[in-house]
Amino acid sequence: MNSANGAAVVVGVDGSEPALRAVRLAAAEAARRHRPLRVVHAFVWPLLRVPVTPPAGAPPGGGLRHQAEQLVAAAVGEAEAAAPGVRVSGEIIDGEASAVLLGETPSATMLVLGDRGLGGFAALVVGSVAVQVAAHADCPVLVARGAQRPAGAVVVGVDGSPPSRAAVGFAAEEAALRGAPLHAVLAYTHPVSTGPGDMQPLVYQENRLHDEEDRVLAQSLTGLAERHPGVPVTREAVHGRPVAVLTEAARDAQLMVVGGQGRGELSGLLLGSVSQGVLHHADCPVAVVRSPG
Image (spheres, rainbow, N blue to C red):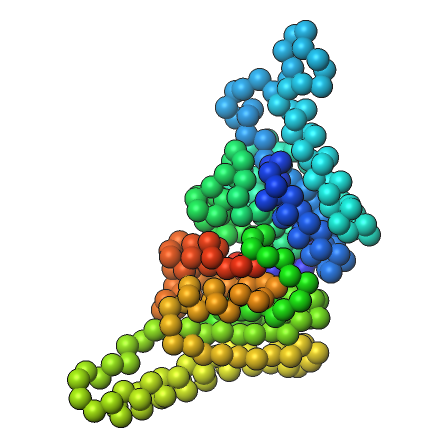
């Protein structure tokens, strides 16, 4: 997580309604963190050699470049209205969406995106832009989706891996900033069946496995009480598939946080089914946090 003094919260915009929801979410984050907000639009047309200025004799307010300026101005106005005390700036950057957004992340506190969009952002969640940005960003990536609730817990998916601990740290910071409780969830899917016969070994194995996973979860939360003494923390180890477990945990949450990679079922978080499932089904904004390095 980039914590350099003055580092901005960055939001990618494309003129769509989901992008404007992302702008409002980004403005709230900037206000909580006392950071400036930077609105960025990736302008791909020059790369495609498409004329971006009005043709000869056309009204001066026409052309693709002017349209881009208008949508950035509208996004800046939306942000200023949502968070009047936040310093907001906007910029149009020539380039493809994922490249432009990744170029912003080394100096950003956080990158915020909508869950759907237009043009280069059209496949944000289900396609290459989200995968590339979340897999390689040098800061947390927050996707504005589902309900944006003013109350509810910050939920973090935990699996005991170092990337998971980075997610826990970010989630605890968010909970402190929001005045919210933190709920840590570990989903495990190890087989517990001992085959046909007496059910006592099955029950014993399940209980022992649950205790082992709960210990992993508790270890992942070590030190949080000292670093964030005002944040109430609860934990839950649940036998089930991670997408289903995390989606259910996010039902009443104000934020879901997941790590950039992990162990076991979470090992394919960015490129596999878990990330796609959480981003498609969690009914709240989702933050993806990569561990340093």
